[in-house]
Length: 314
Image 1 (spheres, one colour):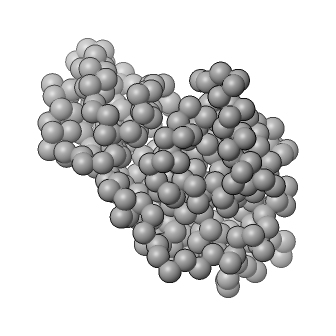
Image 2 (cartoon, one colour; image 1 turned 45 degrees about the vertical axis):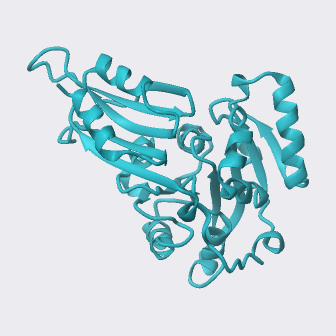
Image 3 (tube, rainbow, N blue to C red; image 1 turned 90 degrees about the vertical axis):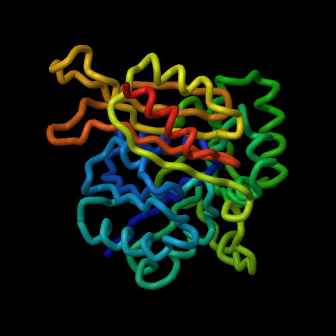
């Protein structure tokens, strides 16, 4: 049986990993791509943001795919491969996860006989590159293991900043291919089925300490509430404190008038001081119309966050 290629997508919080994966899922390339998406928080947000069918995607929330839910990763990969509905596999790690132990999962039985690592792609945020490298050493480890680097959001900085960032990237991964992108869009012929994975470079990973995000003061708070008023929600979001440097969610905007049943399904993203909202797809029949949000930062105050969010539903 021909082995299924596997691409691991890694990168810091808010770099644009899900945006890139969604681009792959909606592009024309002839591949039947299955996705495994991991989130550190208890409420799965990225899975709700994915533009794919449920039978081609498996969520692994509430844990780190490089340690606490690594066994779940193994089972998820086996399930997708045996389904016969995919011929390519992408694993999107949490922004707090190391990529090499994820890669190791595919190089031991039984997956080593059914799947073959194609590359590790690290997505970087050009605007917040330095901040991410300083904030969490996992961001540097994610970069150091990259076979391919997507320098994303280059449209948000000037050319001088792009060149400075690229120069620093090359210090850490001199052999990696660097591709500049906007909104995760790139020539997929350079990224899928390219055979860039170098086992000699990656599979010697055997750190005694595995502390990364778990011992760096990083916290998450996930919550679910009802449909929100768009103006109140925007006011809430623009006043979030700076210690919350990443937040995302699926937002249910209230119906235009009672009984109209025209609630909007909107994706929300906050990275640093930058935030945006965009329409996704219509609510499916039978789908619960609710707002799901995850906050990531330091010294979070869940009660205050919940109180503020609840006010947007009144």
